[in-house]
Image (cartoon, rainbow, N blue to C red; front, side, top):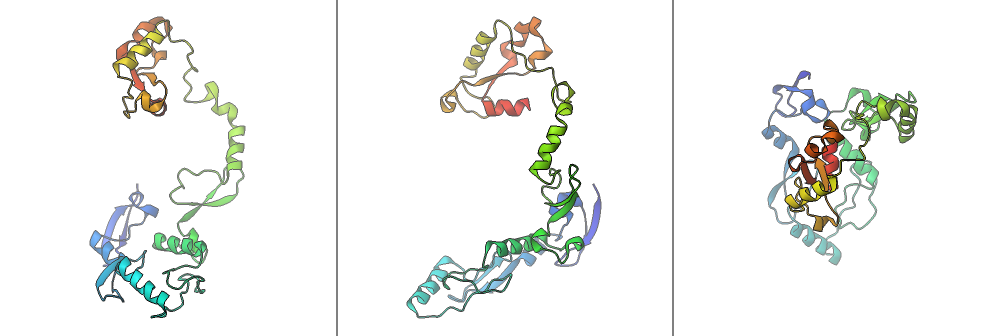
Length: 264
């Protein structure tokens, strides 16, 4: 994992860090003190005169809901007249009651503001483009060979540009990815676990008091019988050694969800 050196945005102190340890691969502050100084704003409540602070990403005008309600009550009675509100992103006037502290005129403007606040530093390759794409990177779809943009969070898992391309890839590689051609193939399901399987299954559930040994859910809560899982797979023993495979020490009671998690 590469190490980079950059300067703190607040105090300018140089710092060295691993790029994979931070969102977007960029560290902005050298300490929590610098982070608080950069993200917190000190102000005074216009209603009661009390000093308070708020996060830069969530501006507040009043120190509490009581002060905001007091100002709203005066506005409703006509005692004070509140100034018109404008959108912080596009500058257009905001329609609606003036007593509500609204910062944006639409969800689109709110999304742009949030993308800018989360991006921190604008990347050179997207400078001047839409601000809601600041935290996205460019990739090429291996199916249709078209470029597309994806968020940094999903960049490691997102491979195709759309579900249509992913479906086409699955259909094209179905013969290579299914059955014995799959690297996880273990010989297919085993329909027969030996003549003592039903009794061994009942004994395992009785021993575990009809409770999942992983999450604690009971059969009464689940509404059906629990699954019985072989700790060491039955295929490792074979049908010839079914008594050893179905021994109580090799069985455990699990709910369907926990059973699926362990099988995976």
